[in-house]
Image (cartoon, rainbow, N blue to C red; front, top):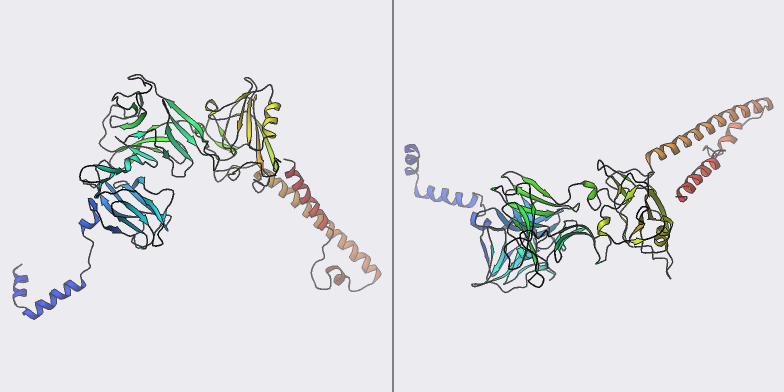
Length: 504
Protein backbone atom coordinates (compact mmCIF):
# COMPACT_ATOMS: atom_id res chain seq x y z
CA UNK A 1 0.00 0.00 0.00
CA UNK A 2 2.86 2.38 0.83
CA UNK A 3 4.53 1.59 -2.49
CA UNK A 4 1.31 2.38 -4.38
CA UNK A 5 0.92 5.69 -2.47
CA UNK A 6 4.50 6.64 -3.18
CA UNK A 7 3.98 5.88 -6.86
CA UNK A 8 0.87 8.09 -7.07
CA UNK A 9 2.50 11.05 -5.28
CA UNK A 10 5.34 11.04 -7.82
CA UNK A 11 2.93 11.41 -10.77
CA UNK A 12 2.43 14.87 -12.22
CA UNK A 13 -1.03 16.35 -12.43
CA UNK A 14 -0.95 15.91 -16.23
CA UNK A 15 -0.18 12.21 -15.90
CA UNK A 16 -2.99 11.73 -13.39
CA UNK A 17 -5.44 13.46 -15.76
CA UNK A 18 -4.37 11.19 -18.64
CA UNK A 19 -4.81 8.05 -16.55
CA UNK A 20 -8.24 9.16 -15.36
CA UNK A 21 -9.41 9.86 -18.94
CA UNK A 22 -8.07 6.50 -20.10
CA UNK A 23 -10.01 4.65 -17.40
CA UNK A 24 -13.21 6.52 -18.25
CA UNK A 25 -12.90 5.92 -22.00
CA UNK A 26 -11.78 2.30 -22.12
CA UNK A 27 -13.30 0.63 -19.07
CA UNK A 28 -16.32 -1.48 -20.22
CA UNK A 29 -19.69 -0.08 -19.21
CA UNK A 30 -21.97 -2.73 -17.58
CA UNK A 31 -25.71 -2.26 -17.15
CA UNK A 32 -26.56 -1.11 -13.67
CA UNK A 33 -28.17 -3.62 -11.34
CA UNK A 34 -30.96 -1.14 -10.72
CA UNK A 35 -31.87 -1.10 -14.40
CA UNK A 36 -31.82 -4.90 -14.57
CA UNK A 37 -33.95 -5.37 -11.43
CA UNK A 38 -36.57 -2.63 -11.59
CA UNK A 39 -39.37 -3.22 -9.10
CA UNK A 40 -41.90 -0.97 -10.87
CA UNK A 41 -42.54 0.46 -14.32
CA UNK A 42 -43.88 3.99 -14.57
CA UNK A 43 -45.61 5.82 -17.43
CA UNK A 44 -43.45 6.46 -20.50
CA UNK A 45 -41.51 3.25 -19.90
CA UNK A 46 -40.32 1.74 -23.21
CA UNK A 47 -38.19 -1.32 -23.98
CA UNK A 48 -37.17 -3.38 -27.01
CA UNK A 49 -35.51 -6.80 -27.18
CA UNK A 50 -31.73 -6.90 -27.32
CA UNK A 51 -30.67 -8.93 -30.41
CA UNK A 52 -27.61 -10.25 -28.53
CA UNK A 53 -29.71 -11.94 -25.81
CA UNK A 54 -30.45 -15.57 -26.59
CA UNK A 55 -33.03 -16.57 -23.96
CA UNK A 56 -34.62 -14.06 -21.59
CA UNK A 57 -34.34 -10.30 -21.10
CA UNK A 58 -35.41 -9.08 -17.65
CA UNK A 59 -37.56 -5.95 -17.38
CA UNK A 60 -39.21 -6.16 -13.97
CA UNK A 61 -38.52 -8.17 -10.80
CA UNK A 62 -40.38 -8.87 -7.57
CA UNK A 63 -38.90 -7.56 -4.29
CA UNK A 64 -37.39 -10.97 -3.40
CA UNK A 65 -35.89 -11.68 -6.81
CA UNK A 66 -37.79 -14.97 -7.27
CA UNK A 67 -39.83 -13.84 -10.29
CA UNK A 68 -39.08 -11.77 -13.36
CA UNK A 69 -41.17 -10.23 -16.13
CA UNK A 70 -39.45 -9.79 -19.47
CA UNK A 71 -38.91 -10.82 -23.08
CA UNK A 72 -38.72 -14.60 -23.63
CA UNK A 73 -37.11 -15.72 -26.89
CA UNK A 74 -39.18 -18.44 -28.61
CA UNK A 75 -37.90 -20.53 -31.54
CA UNK A 76 -34.99 -18.08 -31.99
CA UNK A 77 -37.00 -15.50 -33.95
CA UNK A 78 -40.16 -14.93 -31.88
CA UNK A 79 -40.94 -13.15 -28.64
CA UNK A 80 -43.36 -13.61 -25.76
CA UNK A 81 -43.82 -11.30 -22.82
CA UNK A 82 -43.34 -13.83 -20.02
CA UNK A 83 -43.16 -14.21 -16.27
CA UNK A 84 -40.38 -16.55 -15.16
CA UNK A 85 -39.67 -18.36 -11.93
CA UNK A 86 -36.04 -17.22 -11.72
CA UNK A 87 -34.44 -20.20 -9.89
CA UNK A 88 -35.80 -22.68 -12.45
CA UNK A 89 -36.18 -20.39 -15.52
CA UNK A 90 -39.66 -21.91 -15.84
CA UNK A 91 -42.32 -19.70 -17.51
CA UNK A 92 -45.36 -19.39 -15.24
CA UNK A 93 -47.34 -16.98 -17.42
CA UNK A 94 -47.31 -15.65 -20.99
CA UNK A 95 -49.05 -12.46 -22.03
CA UNK A 96 -49.35 -13.32 -25.73
CA UNK A 97 -49.18 -17.12 -26.25
CA UNK A 98 -51.49 -17.08 -29.28
CA UNK A 99 -49.83 -14.17 -31.10
CA UNK A 100 -46.06 -14.09 -30.70
CA UNK A 101 -44.12 -10.99 -31.74
CA UNK A 102 -40.82 -10.88 -33.61
CA UNK A 103 -37.55 -10.84 -31.68
CA UNK A 104 -36.40 -7.57 -33.18
CA UNK A 105 -35.12 -4.30 -31.78
CA UNK A 106 -38.07 -2.68 -33.58
CA UNK A 107 -40.62 -4.56 -31.44
CA UNK A 108 -41.51 -2.46 -28.39
CA UNK A 109 -43.18 -2.81 -25.02
CA UNK A 110 -44.47 0.49 -23.66
CA UNK A 111 -46.39 1.51 -20.57
CA UNK A 112 -48.60 4.51 -21.22
CA UNK A 113 -51.25 3.58 -18.67
CA UNK A 114 -51.57 0.29 -20.56
CA UNK A 115 -48.88 -2.28 -21.18
CA UNK A 116 -48.72 -2.56 -24.97
CA UNK A 117 -46.60 -4.92 -27.08
CA UNK A 118 -46.43 -3.75 -30.70
CA UNK A 119 -44.28 -3.31 -33.82
CA UNK A 120 -43.44 -0.19 -35.89
CA UNK A 121 -46.20 -0.95 -38.39
CA UNK A 122 -48.76 -0.38 -35.67
CA UNK A 123 -49.63 -4.04 -35.12
CA UNK A 124 -50.60 -4.60 -31.50
CA UNK A 125 -49.80 -8.11 -30.31
CA UNK A 126 -51.16 -7.61 -26.81
CA UNK A 127 -52.47 -4.86 -24.55
CA UNK A 128 -54.00 -4.54 -21.08
CA UNK A 129 -56.35 -1.69 -22.17
CA UNK A 130 -55.97 0.17 -18.87
CA UNK A 131 -55.21 3.67 -17.57
CA UNK A 132 -52.89 2.92 -14.67
CA UNK A 133 -50.01 4.72 -12.99
CA UNK A 134 -47.50 1.92 -12.52
CA UNK A 135 -46.74 -1.78 -13.09
CA UNK A 136 -45.51 -3.90 -10.19
CA UNK A 137 -44.59 -7.56 -9.74
CA UNK A 138 -45.62 -8.95 -6.35
CA UNK A 139 -43.72 -11.67 -4.49
CA UNK A 140 -46.68 -14.00 -5.23
CA UNK A 141 -45.74 -13.83 -8.98
CA UNK A 142 -48.78 -11.63 -9.72
CA UNK A 143 -48.20 -8.75 -12.18
CA UNK A 144 -50.46 -5.78 -11.40
CA UNK A 145 -51.30 -2.44 -12.99
CA UNK A 146 -52.20 -0.04 -10.21
CA UNK A 147 -53.39 3.48 -9.57
CA UNK A 148 -52.82 5.22 -6.25
CA UNK A 149 -55.92 3.55 -4.82
CA UNK A 150 -56.83 0.45 -6.79
CA UNK A 151 -55.72 -2.51 -8.92
CA UNK A 152 -56.93 -2.14 -12.51
CA UNK A 153 -55.51 -5.34 -13.99
CA UNK A 154 -53.58 -8.41 -12.81
CA UNK A 155 -52.01 -11.40 -14.52
CA UNK A 156 -53.66 -13.78 -11.99
CA UNK A 157 -56.96 -13.09 -13.80
CA UNK A 158 -55.55 -14.30 -17.14
CA UNK A 159 -53.70 -17.61 -16.52
CA UNK A 160 -52.14 -19.52 -19.41
CA UNK A 161 -51.24 -23.14 -18.56
CA UNK A 162 -50.19 -22.74 -14.90
CA UNK A 163 -51.71 -21.84 -11.52
CA UNK A 164 -49.54 -21.03 -8.51
CA UNK A 165 -50.52 -21.28 -4.87
CA UNK A 166 -53.21 -18.88 -3.63
CA UNK A 167 -54.17 -17.91 -7.21
CA UNK A 168 -57.94 -18.06 -7.73
CA UNK A 169 -59.18 -19.93 -10.80
CA UNK A 170 -62.80 -19.02 -11.58
CA UNK A 171 -65.50 -20.37 -13.87
CA UNK A 172 -64.80 -17.57 -16.38
CA UNK A 173 -61.17 -18.67 -16.86
CA UNK A 174 -59.48 -21.56 -18.63
CA UNK A 175 -56.04 -23.13 -18.63
CA UNK A 176 -54.71 -24.06 -22.07
CA UNK A 177 -51.78 -26.41 -22.72
CA UNK A 178 -48.74 -24.98 -24.48
CA UNK A 179 -49.65 -26.81 -27.72
CA UNK A 180 -53.21 -25.46 -27.65
CA UNK A 181 -54.83 -28.93 -27.76
CA UNK A 182 -56.12 -29.24 -24.19
CA UNK A 183 -57.92 -27.01 -21.72
CA UNK A 184 -59.12 -27.06 -18.11
CA UNK A 185 -62.40 -25.41 -17.10
CA UNK A 186 -64.86 -25.39 -14.20
CA UNK A 187 -68.50 -26.39 -14.40
CA UNK A 188 -71.29 -25.83 -11.87
CA UNK A 189 -69.96 -28.54 -9.55
CA UNK A 190 -66.98 -30.09 -11.29
CA UNK A 191 -63.56 -29.54 -12.83
CA UNK A 192 -63.05 -30.85 -16.38
CA UNK A 193 -60.27 -31.43 -18.91
CA UNK A 194 -61.16 -31.00 -22.59
CA UNK A 195 -59.48 -31.91 -25.89
CA UNK A 196 -59.74 -29.89 -29.10
CA UNK A 197 -59.59 -32.82 -31.54
CA UNK A 198 -61.67 -31.04 -34.18
CA UNK A 199 -60.18 -27.80 -35.52
CA UNK A 200 -62.53 -24.86 -35.93
CA UNK A 201 -65.10 -26.39 -33.60
CA UNK A 202 -66.33 -25.04 -30.27
CA UNK A 203 -67.48 -28.49 -29.11
CA UNK A 204 -64.42 -29.86 -27.31
CA UNK A 205 -64.39 -33.46 -26.08
CA UNK A 206 -64.25 -33.84 -22.30
CA UNK A 207 -61.86 -36.64 -21.27
CA UNK A 208 -61.55 -36.18 -17.48
CA UNK A 209 -64.01 -34.88 -14.92
CA UNK A 210 -63.71 -34.50 -11.16
CA UNK A 211 -66.93 -33.75 -9.34
CA UNK A 212 -66.89 -31.85 -6.04
CA UNK A 213 -67.29 -34.32 -3.15
CA UNK A 214 -68.97 -31.68 -0.93
CA UNK A 215 -67.68 -33.23 2.33
CA UNK A 216 -66.70 -30.11 4.32
CA UNK A 217 -69.21 -27.81 2.64
CA UNK A 218 -72.03 -28.14 0.13
CA UNK A 219 -72.58 -26.15 -3.04
CA UNK A 220 -75.67 -24.01 -2.54
CA UNK A 221 -77.49 -23.17 -5.75
CA UNK A 222 -77.77 -19.44 -6.33
CA UNK A 223 -75.08 -18.57 -3.78
CA UNK A 224 -72.37 -17.88 -6.32
CA UNK A 225 -70.04 -19.77 -8.67
CA UNK A 226 -67.25 -22.09 -7.62
CA UNK A 227 -63.55 -21.41 -7.96
CA UNK A 228 -60.36 -23.47 -7.52
CA UNK A 229 -57.14 -22.69 -5.68
CA UNK A 230 -53.82 -24.40 -4.97
CA UNK A 231 -53.54 -24.43 -1.19
CA UNK A 232 -50.09 -24.13 0.47
CA UNK A 233 -51.13 -27.03 2.72
CA UNK A 234 -50.77 -29.39 -0.25
CA UNK A 235 -54.09 -29.77 -2.06
CA UNK A 236 -56.15 -28.40 -4.93
CA UNK A 237 -59.38 -27.11 -3.46
CA UNK A 238 -62.71 -26.06 -4.91
CA UNK A 239 -64.69 -23.39 -3.10
CA UNK A 240 -67.98 -21.56 -3.50
CA UNK A 241 -67.72 -17.79 -3.53
CA UNK A 242 -68.35 -16.40 -0.04
CA UNK A 243 -67.61 -19.65 1.81
CA UNK A 244 -64.03 -20.23 3.06
CA UNK A 245 -64.64 -23.97 3.61
CA UNK A 246 -63.72 -26.10 0.55
CA UNK A 247 -66.45 -28.03 -1.23
CA UNK A 248 -63.77 -30.39 -2.54
CA UNK A 249 -60.14 -31.34 -1.84
CA UNK A 250 -57.80 -33.15 -4.21
CA UNK A 251 -54.79 -33.99 -2.00
CA UNK A 252 -51.20 -33.89 -3.22
CA UNK A 253 -48.54 -36.36 -2.11
CA UNK A 254 -47.36 -33.74 0.41
CA UNK A 255 -50.87 -33.13 1.81
CA UNK A 256 -50.57 -31.51 5.27
CA UNK A 257 -46.78 -31.54 4.94
CA UNK A 258 -45.15 -28.11 4.72
CA UNK A 259 -42.72 -27.38 1.89
CA UNK A 260 -40.51 -24.31 1.65
CA UNK A 261 -40.79 -23.78 -2.09
CA UNK A 262 -43.52 -22.62 -4.45
CA UNK A 263 -46.42 -24.92 -5.35
CA UNK A 264 -48.03 -24.95 -8.79
CA UNK A 265 -50.28 -27.01 -11.08
CA UNK A 266 -49.88 -27.12 -14.85
CA UNK A 267 -51.84 -28.46 -17.83
CA UNK A 268 -49.33 -30.49 -19.82
CA UNK A 269 -48.92 -30.91 -23.61
CA UNK A 270 -50.05 -34.57 -23.29
CA UNK A 271 -53.31 -33.47 -21.64
CA UNK A 272 -52.45 -34.44 -18.08
CA UNK A 273 -52.93 -32.04 -15.17
CA UNK A 274 -49.96 -32.19 -12.78
CA UNK A 275 -48.96 -30.58 -9.51
CA UNK A 276 -45.40 -29.71 -8.42
CA UNK A 277 -43.43 -28.05 -5.65
CA UNK A 278 -39.99 -26.41 -5.82
CA UNK A 279 -37.49 -28.10 -3.48
CA UNK A 280 -34.74 -25.53 -3.99
CA UNK A 281 -33.10 -27.21 -6.99
CA UNK A 282 -35.86 -28.81 -9.08
CA UNK A 283 -39.62 -29.15 -9.52
CA UNK A 284 -40.91 -32.31 -7.77
CA UNK A 285 -44.02 -34.05 -9.14
CA UNK A 286 -46.62 -34.02 -6.36
CA UNK A 287 -49.97 -34.71 -8.06
CA UNK A 288 -51.36 -36.26 -11.27
CA UNK A 289 -54.99 -36.06 -12.32
CA UNK A 290 -54.51 -39.02 -14.69
CA UNK A 291 -52.21 -41.73 -13.34
CA UNK A 292 -52.42 -44.37 -16.11
CA UNK A 293 -50.92 -43.52 -19.54
CA UNK A 294 -53.74 -45.19 -21.50
CA UNK A 295 -56.27 -42.90 -19.82
CA UNK A 296 -54.66 -39.84 -21.39
CA UNK A 297 -56.58 -38.42 -24.38
CA UNK A 298 -54.11 -39.54 -27.08
CA UNK A 299 -50.91 -41.08 -25.65
CA UNK A 300 -50.05 -42.96 -28.87
CA UNK A 301 -51.16 -40.31 -31.35
CA UNK A 302 -53.60 -40.57 -34.24
CA UNK A 303 -54.83 -44.13 -34.96
CA UNK A 304 -52.68 -45.44 -32.10
CA UNK A 305 -53.44 -48.35 -29.79
CA UNK A 306 -52.40 -48.21 -26.13
CA UNK A 307 -51.87 -51.52 -24.33
CA UNK A 308 -54.02 -51.42 -21.20
CA UNK A 309 -51.62 -53.64 -19.26
CA UNK A 310 -48.28 -51.96 -19.93
CA UNK A 311 -49.08 -48.68 -21.71
CA UNK A 312 -47.09 -49.69 -24.82
CA UNK A 313 -47.99 -48.12 -28.16
CA UNK A 314 -48.85 -49.83 -31.44
CA UNK A 315 -51.18 -49.06 -34.36
CA UNK A 316 -54.83 -49.86 -35.01
CA UNK A 317 -53.77 -51.01 -38.47
CA UNK A 318 -51.48 -53.93 -37.57
CA UNK A 319 -49.73 -53.61 -40.94
CA UNK A 320 -48.43 -50.19 -39.91
CA UNK A 321 -45.39 -49.75 -37.69
CA UNK A 322 -45.58 -47.34 -34.74
CA UNK A 323 -42.63 -44.99 -34.97
CA UNK A 324 -41.82 -41.32 -34.42
CA UNK A 325 -44.76 -41.08 -32.04
CA UNK A 326 -47.49 -41.66 -34.64
CA UNK A 327 -49.13 -44.23 -36.89
CA UNK A 328 -50.62 -41.88 -39.48
CA UNK A 329 -50.24 -38.11 -39.84
CA UNK A 330 -52.74 -36.03 -37.89
CA UNK A 331 -55.87 -35.45 -39.98
CA UNK A 332 -58.46 -32.68 -39.95
CA UNK A 333 -61.92 -31.82 -41.22
CA UNK A 334 -64.46 -34.42 -42.27
CA UNK A 335 -65.51 -36.48 -45.31
CA UNK A 336 -68.14 -34.07 -46.62
CA UNK A 337 -66.03 -32.52 -49.38
CA UNK A 338 -67.52 -34.58 -52.21
CA UNK A 339 -70.27 -32.00 -52.84
CA UNK A 340 -74.07 -32.39 -52.64
CA UNK A 341 -73.69 -34.57 -49.57
CA UNK A 342 -71.40 -37.03 -51.33
CA UNK A 343 -68.86 -38.64 -49.00
CA UNK A 344 -65.23 -38.18 -50.06
CA UNK A 345 -62.89 -41.15 -50.47
CA UNK A 346 -61.61 -43.09 -47.47
CA UNK A 347 -60.52 -46.56 -46.56
CA UNK A 348 -61.42 -48.44 -43.39
CA UNK A 349 -59.68 -50.11 -40.46
CA UNK A 350 -61.71 -52.65 -38.47
CA UNK A 351 -60.34 -53.85 -35.16
CA UNK A 352 -61.78 -55.91 -32.31
CA UNK A 353 -60.70 -55.74 -28.68
CA UNK A 354 -60.66 -51.91 -28.50
CA UNK A 355 -62.47 -49.22 -26.53
CA UNK A 356 -62.36 -45.46 -25.95
CA UNK A 357 -60.34 -44.27 -22.92
CA UNK A 358 -63.06 -41.79 -21.85
CA UNK A 359 -66.22 -43.59 -23.02
CA UNK A 360 -67.99 -42.85 -19.71
CA UNK A 361 -67.95 -39.16 -20.70
CA UNK A 362 -69.21 -39.68 -24.26
CA UNK A 363 -72.70 -39.87 -25.65
CA UNK A 364 -73.89 -43.11 -27.22
CA UNK A 365 -76.81 -44.78 -28.98
CA UNK A 366 -78.16 -48.26 -28.24
CA UNK A 367 -78.15 -50.47 -31.34
CA UNK A 368 -78.90 -54.11 -32.06
CA UNK A 369 -75.63 -55.05 -33.77
CA UNK A 370 -72.15 -53.97 -34.71
CA UNK A 371 -73.23 -53.85 -38.37
CA UNK A 372 -75.91 -51.29 -37.59
CA UNK A 373 -73.41 -49.18 -35.62
CA UNK A 374 -70.94 -49.31 -38.51
CA UNK A 375 -73.52 -48.34 -41.12
CA UNK A 376 -74.61 -45.30 -39.11
CA UNK A 377 -71.04 -43.99 -39.20
CA UNK A 378 -70.34 -45.07 -42.77
CA UNK A 379 -73.23 -43.00 -44.15
CA UNK A 380 -72.41 -39.92 -42.07
CA UNK A 381 -69.74 -37.75 -43.67
CA UNK A 382 -69.03 -36.08 -40.30
CA UNK A 383 -68.31 -39.39 -38.59
CA UNK A 384 -64.70 -40.60 -38.36
CA UNK A 385 -65.32 -43.85 -36.53
CA UNK A 386 -67.46 -45.90 -34.18
CA UNK A 387 -66.86 -48.32 -31.31
CA UNK A 388 -69.50 -50.92 -30.44
CA UNK A 389 -69.92 -52.91 -27.23
CA UNK A 390 -71.67 -56.13 -28.13
CA UNK A 391 -72.56 -56.83 -24.48
CA UNK A 392 -74.36 -53.54 -23.78
CA UNK A 393 -75.34 -52.58 -27.34
CA UNK A 394 -73.79 -49.14 -26.90
CA UNK A 395 -72.54 -47.49 -30.10
CA UNK A 396 -70.08 -44.62 -29.59
CA UNK A 397 -69.50 -42.45 -32.67
CA UNK A 398 -66.65 -39.95 -33.11
CA UNK A 399 -67.14 -36.73 -35.08
CA UNK A 400 -63.43 -35.90 -34.89
CA UNK A 401 -60.27 -37.50 -36.36
CA UNK A 402 -59.37 -40.79 -34.70
CA UNK A 403 -57.08 -40.56 -31.68
CA UNK A 404 -55.65 -43.33 -29.49
CA UNK A 405 -57.82 -46.31 -28.60
CA UNK A 406 -57.21 -48.68 -25.67
CA UNK A 407 -56.51 -52.35 -26.34
CA UNK A 408 -58.62 -54.71 -24.18
CA UNK A 409 -59.00 -58.46 -24.04
CA UNK A 410 -62.73 -58.39 -24.79
CA UNK A 411 -63.18 -59.24 -28.49
CA UNK A 412 -66.86 -58.22 -28.33
CA UNK A 413 -65.75 -54.56 -28.28
CA UNK A 414 -65.28 -53.69 -31.94
CA UNK A 415 -64.19 -50.59 -33.79
CA UNK A 416 -64.72 -49.11 -37.25
CA UNK A 417 -62.35 -46.31 -38.28
CA UNK A 418 -62.18 -44.20 -41.44
CA UNK A 419 -58.84 -43.14 -42.88
CA UNK A 420 -58.65 -40.41 -45.50
CA UNK A 421 -57.58 -41.78 -48.90
CA UNK A 422 -53.81 -41.48 -49.33
CA UNK A 423 -52.99 -41.29 -45.61
CA UNK A 424 -50.40 -43.76 -44.40
CA UNK A 425 -49.46 -45.18 -47.80
CA UNK A 426 -45.77 -44.63 -47.09
CA UNK A 427 -45.91 -46.20 -43.64
CA UNK A 428 -46.06 -49.88 -44.49
CA UNK A 429 -45.26 -52.42 -41.83
CA UNK A 430 -41.57 -53.31 -41.89
CA UNK A 431 -42.34 -57.02 -42.24
CA UNK A 432 -44.63 -56.32 -45.20
CA UNK A 433 -41.97 -54.12 -46.79
CA UNK A 434 -39.27 -56.76 -46.26
CA UNK A 435 -41.53 -59.39 -47.81
CA UNK A 436 -42.04 -57.25 -50.89
CA UNK A 437 -38.30 -56.67 -51.05
CA UNK A 438 -37.59 -60.42 -50.90
CA UNK A 439 -40.11 -61.13 -53.66
CA UNK A 440 -38.68 -58.37 -55.87
CA UNK A 441 -35.14 -59.60 -55.18
CA UNK A 442 -36.09 -63.15 -56.12
CA UNK A 443 -37.64 -61.88 -59.35
CA UNK A 444 -34.47 -59.95 -60.20
CA UNK A 445 -32.30 -63.04 -59.56
CA UNK A 446 -34.62 -65.23 -61.63
CA UNK A 447 -34.65 -62.75 -64.51
CA UNK A 448 -30.85 -62.41 -64.30
CA UNK A 449 -30.31 -66.19 -64.43
CA UNK A 450 -32.80 -66.51 -67.29
CA UNK A 451 -31.06 -63.68 -69.11
CA UNK A 452 -27.60 -65.29 -68.77
CA UNK A 453 -28.94 -68.64 -69.94
CA UNK A 454 -30.67 -67.01 -72.93
CA UNK A 455 -27.52 -65.05 -73.79
CA UNK A 456 -25.36 -68.18 -73.77
CA UNK A 457 -27.87 -70.05 -75.94
CA UNK A 458 -27.94 -67.11 -78.35
CA UNK A 459 -24.10 -67.01 -78.49
CA UNK A 460 -23.97 -70.70 -79.30
CA UNK A 461 -26.59 -70.29 -82.02
CA UNK A 462 -24.84 -67.25 -83.52
CA UNK A 463 -21.52 -69.04 -83.30
CA UNK A 464 -22.86 -71.90 -85.34
CA UNK A 465 -24.31 -69.42 -87.84
CA UNK A 466 -21.00 -67.48 -88.09
CA UNK A 467 -22.70 -64.05 -87.99
CA UNK A 468 -20.88 -60.97 -86.60
CA UNK A 469 -21.96 -57.90 -84.73
CA UNK A 470 -24.25 -59.88 -82.40
CA UNK A 471 -23.11 -58.09 -79.28
CA UNK A 472 -23.81 -54.74 -80.86
CA UNK A 473 -27.32 -55.79 -81.77
CA UNK A 474 -27.95 -56.95 -78.15
CA UNK A 475 -26.69 -53.81 -76.48
CA UNK A 476 -28.12 -51.40 -79.02
CA UNK A 477 -26.47 -48.81 -81.22
CA UNK A 478 -25.74 -46.35 -78.39
CA UNK A 479 -24.07 -48.88 -76.13
CA UNK A 480 -26.90 -48.85 -73.49
CA UNK A 481 -28.78 -51.93 -72.39
CA UNK A 482 -32.08 -52.63 -74.08
CA UNK A 483 -35.22 -52.87 -71.95
CA UNK A 484 -34.92 -56.65 -71.91
CA UNK A 485 -37.51 -59.25 -71.06
CA UNK A 486 -37.80 -58.11 -67.39
CA UNK A 487 -39.43 -54.72 -67.94
CA UNK A 488 -43.01 -55.98 -68.01
CA UNK A 489 -42.40 -58.30 -65.06
CA UNK A 490 -41.36 -55.33 -62.89
CA UNK A 491 -44.39 -53.28 -63.90
CA UNK A 492 -46.73 -56.15 -63.20
CA UNK A 493 -45.14 -56.67 -59.80
CA UNK A 494 -45.64 -53.04 -58.72
CA UNK A 495 -49.20 -53.03 -60.08
CA UNK A 496 -50.06 -55.96 -57.84
CA UNK A 497 -48.63 -54.17 -54.78
CA UNK A 498 -50.75 -51.07 -55.44
CA UNK A 499 -53.85 -53.21 -55.85
CA UNK A 500 -53.07 -54.76 -52.50
CA UNK A 501 -52.95 -51.32 -50.90
CA UNK A 502 -56.23 -50.29 -52.47
CA UNK A 503 -57.90 -53.38 -51.12
CA UNK A 504 -57.43 -52.12 -47.59
